[in-house]
Length: 177
Image: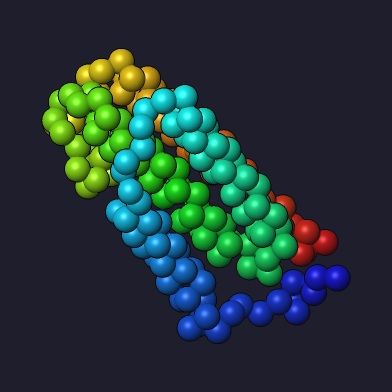
């Protein structure tokens, strides 16, 4: 049985800082390290498409897992921050890697050759909807992948953010009852 709201005390300042700031930063750092060390020797074939779909299914599974953690957490808002700090970078890294592999398998898919950093820059520019124009999708495959990312961005920003905020609110309301 969860303690009532009067029995929940905020975590000590050091633990709060660790949970709310350090863990999300560490999560993003680990995801970026994995992104930069993954080999890029994938071939573009049906299996590559299946892997991308499975990676996106993984994102959905992580969202479900994070919502459960939020609902069980004594500090749901902190857990919500951690969830967003994991889900959004995971989603972006998946697409950055896909762009990087695509460019290396189908040269001239973009207006310039993509390094890993260029691919990451491009995915964040698409996610932020700023599209600076220095890198653009040229091939049909690249454009389809960008369309898929854009739809995913909208779902992530609208749906996932709403799901996590709702989970935080319900968890807090459950503690008050």
